[in-house]
Length: 559
Image (tube, rainbow, N blue to C red; front, side):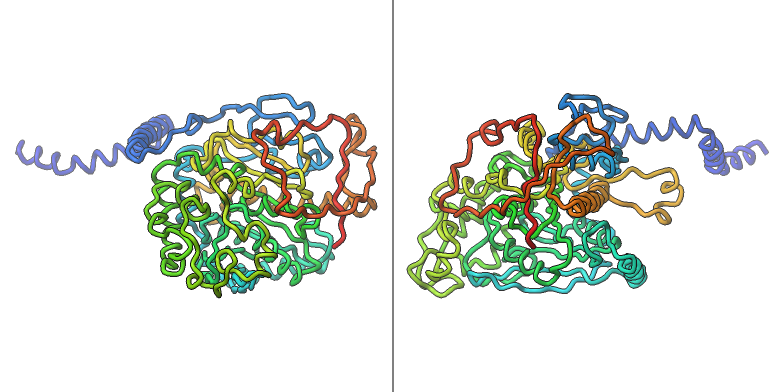
């Protein structure tokens, strides 16, 4: 009998343990202790994984409730901040953004594990939720030198979402306005992906959200990327905006009455910032934004990346080059490029003649001639110095640094950066003098976010419903789209008052009593590429501190 009882107890023991565990987990104290123990074990496991993969661990990865040091744009002094820090020159636009752009004042950036910089970065580059719901139609644009770039127009999502978006657009148009724009026509959002091409899940999510808000969305793909045919033996240099300039002119010709704004992702900021600097006030863009931008190209290429990201980027670029091995073999050392182990060596092999082969008249994708890279004389004249390869690595960056013409930028540019970005140099290398002296550049610096991540923390309601009833978003996407709306409202008010952009004369003036400076200046001419001044050696030389006096926005709207 005793043995039978013991057999029954042993048989029922697992079930009894599960019942006791279930009862215990219903107690808040036990549940909290269990959650802490699981998180601690998961953190130690993740630390081990990072050590094996040689991924850096950032100090702020697990800190919650910390108050980072921010900047008070009114006084220029440092202060404690619980959210994003806006670093910029004190202007009327900056004040207006702080008052009306809600995401700049508050954020719910996710903490560990969803907020881990490496998990956010890999998630934004490799997988997402809106990848299969988007539909695009492609335009191939023929360029001056015979090359081709691709423009993907977003034409829809799932049927239900497309129907709701169309109904919302009709309501906006019936009211005579759209997202605070100047005209009832929907605005056009131009997206510029990473320099190695392809539409990442992070960019697809931004496209998806912009379409829901009524934007026309078009994605720019440089030549030879994202299945865009390569018809010339030329690849786009990191900071060469010539192709983007022609693409923007084409988009503007298709929607001449629409507001045109642009967003770049990561290294795609190289051509966007270069374009804004070279075009100055003649650009068709009204505002621009850069998410996790590469502000200093040479420093980015010379800074060693973690191996996982470096090999991933190299694999992507080598895969693109390998498609045209036979065509490029006569103009550059393809075998050396495919054997490079760093992004710097790869870029230098492609674009610097010290490691290139001499062009052959019977090679390449274009018809041969005595001109560089087989280009026709008319094309060489149109391209200027870019028809010739850079002499060396330093001269390459003299004409390709994204901020080489920052003083010529004539539209507001919002740069969103994270302190724990694993793909960019440390935040200590950011050109803060530029943002504190140039009124057209605004920097938003967060404590967490990774590279093009900026995942939002789930609320209690989202955790209970599993995120099904409450839509999940990305903080950088919400911020950028709201920034465009606020800037459009600001400019619309300026046009209604009959003047150009300006700042208050008196810093102590109230909101209702503003004094404005009117100044309609002629648009600045684009300087010839061959006469561009040498690149300064440091940030202090590059951006001199502006006077603390008044500032007048000098953009002339002639479109």
